[in-house]
Amino acid sequence: MKKLSLVAASLLSALVVGQASAADTTGFYVGGALNRVTVDAFDDSESGTGLGVYGGYNFNEWFGLEANLFATGDLGDKDVDISAGAFSFTPKFTMQINDMFSAYAKVGVASMAVKVEALGFDEDFTGFGWTYGVGVNAAVTEHLNVRLSYDVTTGDLDADHNYLNVKNIDTDIKQLAIGVHYQF
Image (cartoon, rainbow, N blue to C red; front, side, top):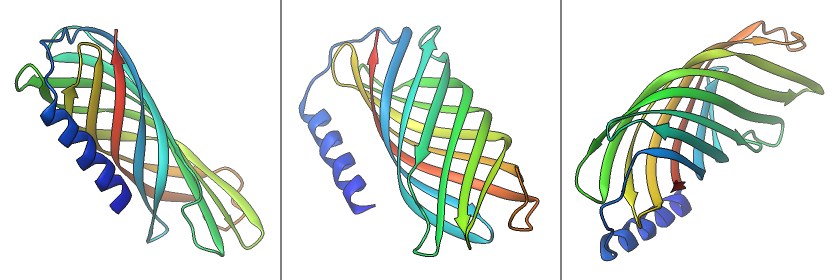
């Protein structure tokens, strides 16, 4: 978490020093993100690093549609391996603060998956849920943007095989992410 905080602070400091011209915020954008992910399942919480890609289309200054795909590596301990991922699709509502900064909120649907390897068994939990998030976007140049976001994806996931005698799990996946995207 400290490394992600240092990276975020460094990037935001660089943004304050630099100046951005008034950028056109409409149209397509695509980017990637480094995430600090926490998975709450099985009355336990596991954290780790994840990677994501996102993209969307802004119809005007305040409304757009966005898709987000992310996955994690192993979040478990030495006896249990847990990994997670989700694909979400959301409408995104943006408020321009000035020429450089904007804030946004989004809410939508998500397809989720959690993989658990424990006690010699390999179990996949999959299902659909809801996602919501907020963030701050900074236009570094006319086309390059950096953003800091917090997203929560929640759902009731069903076991694919029921090897662990668990039929379903109520899961929350929380992401704190620093992302960079190109605005076409």
